[in-house]
Length: 481
Image 1 (tube, rainbow, N blue to C red):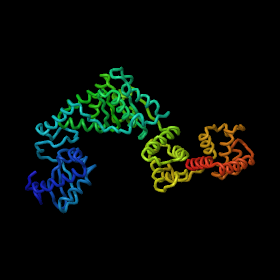
Image 2: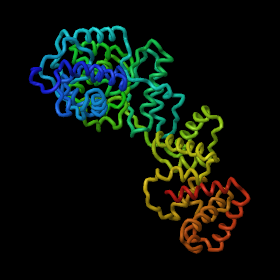
Image 3: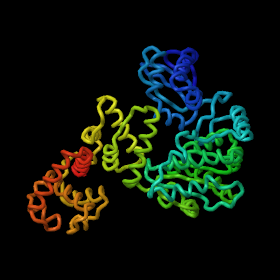
Image 4: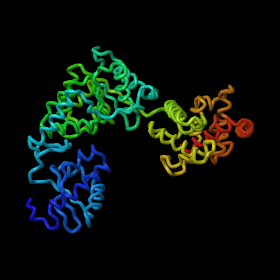
């Protein structure tokens, strides 16, 4: 592009100011992000408040426009007088003679051998030294902090078996493929595997990496024409753990992943994969690869049941209390949350955090009523739910571990009579049904039996604070479905 063709400042003048823009971007984004995405950006022209800047590839232009255009515009406006718009374009003229970064681009065009060589040397050196190119492990995600229940027992047992396998022992199942909806503990398990192997067998080469990070490294290797170092590095891994496989995109990327996967499995190296869906539903992966992924052990993690939700909340509360010993959340409040929030561990943790924050702000002991208010907007529906006697029977029976048949039966055992009386009391309080109607729904009992039950529960609640809290909890659970 001819410098004389520009109106306004020359590229030399623009370049002088661009040094200050680059300094601002470094300060705001950090050196790593700046080097990856902005180091090869150059100013081209400035006219009518629009600054044109160029990058060497379409991929870079698209990525910056999608993720950083606002920050880029703000930094440019702060240094270039009158700039309010920044336009990105792909350079058609020759590129710089020295590559300043390994930018994740998806093609080989546009980079000279001279420019690529310094980066290629770095990539090869990293491979020889065994530097960890993987994703960051979370120190909080270990087997010790993983709460096990019926819904995740198989996945937990399989993960433990992989983590505690002796080096050189036959691989039991390869790959181990763990799938579940978001937030149910896949990432926790594969982080736990990595930490346990590092503790037991520190000489084993373990790599935890997300699909996105895998793509980044492959693109970088393509750019510097050094895919051999990429292949050598990944094929030297003893245990490869890949998270979020559903995000793997692109034909070349899939081919490289398949090659890496097949090489490791054929060499009896362990591969563990986590995804949101089982192998047959990985639509971005070709059929042959899906078949190979399904050839190992495929386990799913289901939504936590009530028992596991209780355990998760107790574990999260214990962790919070280690940081703040003065924190107290009553059992009936935890029981309410466990019944109220039926989603994944993150939702339970979010609900508990909201209750803890509410308690700190009000400086009052948390009650079920206060918890219900704090979590009011987490309801699945904003409509008032019409309470049914069937709901009362179900929730009361579950709470007291009494079957519906026993509640409706003539049995007079205390373990059945008290829940039945509480059920009648709640039916009178929460529904518009008459005493005779309630009696009929509770095993064809007389209306006088219902009236006696209501009065008995009211009397017991006045004398027994624990029972009163229990009945309040049941009332809230029934009202909120």
